[in-house]
Amino acid sequence: MTVFVETNFVLEHALEQEQYEHCEALIRLAANSSIRLMVPAFSLAEPHIALSGKQKLRSKLSIDLQAHLADLGRSRPFSDASASFSKLGAFLTHSAKHEKSALQTTIARLLETARTIPLDSEVLRSASELEATSHLSAQDAIVLASVLAHLAETKPSVSCFLNRNTKDFDDPRILGLLGVYQCKLFGSFRDGLGYIRSRIS
Image 1 (spheres, rainbow, N blue to C red):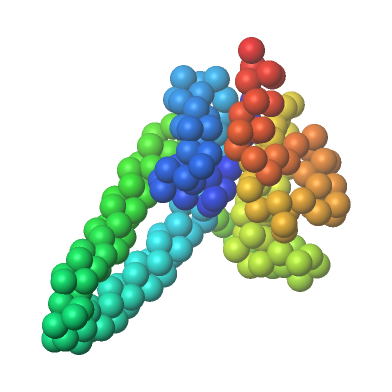
Image 2: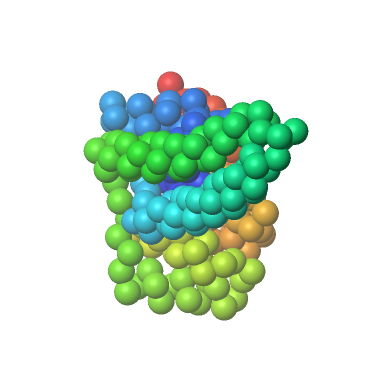
């Protein structure tokens, strides 16, 4: 069974968000060859951009916070509170480093257990057409073009695409494009895992 995942899957697992356990179960299924896990190459690069943006915002917030706390610390009524809140700046810096390390660990595991869909000229041309004819962003169009390219090349008998971005992907036209290859779309990693387990059991 072929299972496609994308950027949200990578971030969900790396940051241990609410559906982390389901993502971990899918990686383990791929590790023991119960499923063929496919990840667009773009989806292994895009999370770095997302976390870099968050890191810059947290760094700026930490610097601004320290400046305000230093100012408040000069006032006797707020000196104790200033010392307490100064730990928040250190926490913001530490959390950014932790997330970066966790992302690198998740990507390393995916490179070992999943297969990568190359980002080539054909995918980019297809993505440009998808972006022009749908409401998809450039990033989402690249992901969808990657999935469709692999479906067209391999024509798996059973496949599904797990993508929590249902706002953009749960669209009749996109469902139709996936439906040509009988590829089901799931907007929840939990629901997708349930479907996969029912098919491979």
